[in-house]
Image (tube, rainbow, N blue to C red; front, side):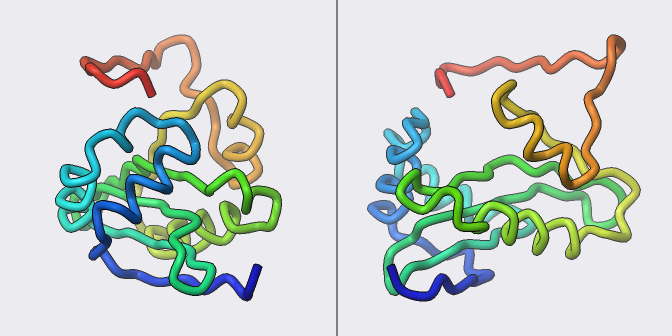
Length: 136
């Protein structure tokens, strides 16, 4: 592994996204053309690169002033444990530090990671709801 670099590009090839998303077994990776288009539409995207290989990504939707919703946070398993996810989260929370609310939905096994950034569980009166055909 070489030095990891971070970029703010929203332009990715479908193949780059397919490889990264499938590396973490996310069904979104089966739709690389849609992912490439979606990345261009996010409010912000930070990515991590090992040379020319996409190894991590975080994307956020926002309303420009009040609310930001972190949608994707993923790091290729071969690169996990190196602080890449932490750096992607830092870049994003720094960018949105003046927003009134930063939200995300977490898998149970990832909650401690997000809590380390100050995120809290919604509590009994907050329920995550979705309508989807994707399994992850």
